[in-house]
Length: 217
Image (cartoon, rainbow, N blue to C red; front, top):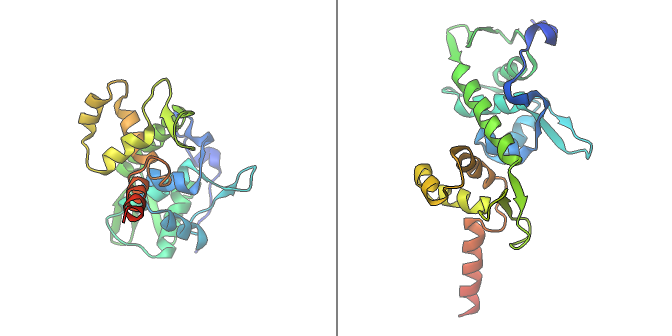
């Protein structure tokens, strides 16, 4: 039985921090949700959640779509495509129920299975807030490799901070090493470095070292 869709004005509450007005690329959504790019593309390809196209015909994922992806990342159980599609419709589009799933407060349930999605939604909103704030803190590094970015009003490369985190640096120690940054900046850098392995990333550094080694033989 198909679930009836309530009007958005009755069903959906506005997201905090102006997130309803934000959209994200596939790479950005994957970084925020902590998923592989190909996983996000697969969810889109098999039509598990809806996306739009921006004015340049690029995929634009809503904040609510990213919230679904983050829930998918944090799910304690593995769900099939039909169930994932139902959850995406409920979380991203405000459906009251689908495929036997219903929602009461933070609890989504179907038969004997219950999922508390409240913490995942709050986690996703916080990660979205940090990413949007961080995106506004970017400044081009005109003196560095093409495409590299700095934190605004500083000489600190975002990829450097993210690469150090990826290598196991503790966020608290990063704040000591870079006192002009705050906790949100450090968390953002960890997401930003996943967008692509561009200039200044650990992998590109290893590749350059390998090429130099090969030339020296």
